[in-house]
Image (cartoon, rainbow, N blue to C red; front, side):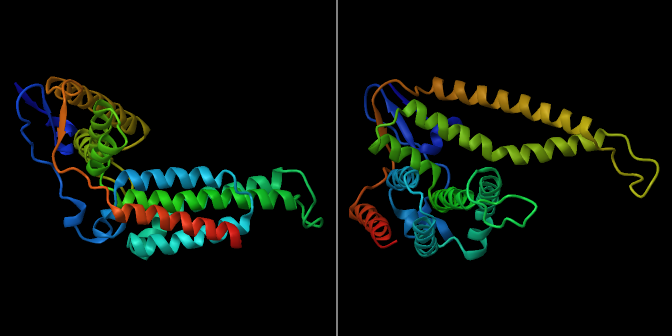
Amino acid sequence: MTATVGSGGAEAAGVTTAARGPAIPVRAVGADPADARGPASSWLARRNPTVVLALLVALSVLTLFLLDPVTLAVLWAVLVVGVLVGARPGLGRFLLAQLPFVGFAIGLVTVNALARPGTELWPDLPVRVTVEGLTIGSALALRTMVIGVGSVALVLTVDPRRLMVSLVQHARLSPRVAYSLLAGYRLLGVLPQQWRTITRAHAVRAPLRERGRRAGRPRTGPRMLARCAFTLLVTSIRSAERIAFALESRGLGSGPRTVWRPVALGWQDLALVVGLAGVVATVLVIA
């Protein structure tokens, strides 16, 4: 008996479950990054996703032990150049993706500079700004920027299907966990469209304004948004329940598994690890 894993996210992973007999491959949803254009076809996108994820985790842990702002600034600059060359996200898109991290970094510098005790930098100012606060705040902010560069590179270049397949292949992650995460990721991807559909449906039934410059337009307000949010929550829970039943009914988590379109792990992935380790070691020694 052969059961295929397909609906609601497991099919997107291209995995089959075979209790007995040969496995029957199912069609994967979405193109392979190597067939796309832009960041998805870059050199970094063709690397093993598990290796890229492991490097990001290792880099994030390393920054926890760095408190020198100069070292972190040099490391950030090198990573920016590396991501722009290796991932090719486009300068505008890359800068736009960095804005949340920049805002969080500015907040870290401000809070530490004003709240941390130490030697005052400018005694004549109405607020107290300390040298220790600026130093530690700058280090924490640059940690955020370093992790942000790596996170943007991961999000823009790593295909979710390849990541889950690679985690099952090379990181020995449980298929039940991997394909459940993939199904949840697919569900999150359709939430914006569902929100637009729900808000438009509520706007059609809403009473029209009778006065003012917006006369004749639907009445909108916090109550309408609350109703739309509740509707989206209910539909999302029902969709998640249907996906869970679909994954379970197709044998997810039982029997030996085979992988269709496996993710390769080759010498270029080793070159990426060695190259990044060499760059980080050089920065730590020089800076």
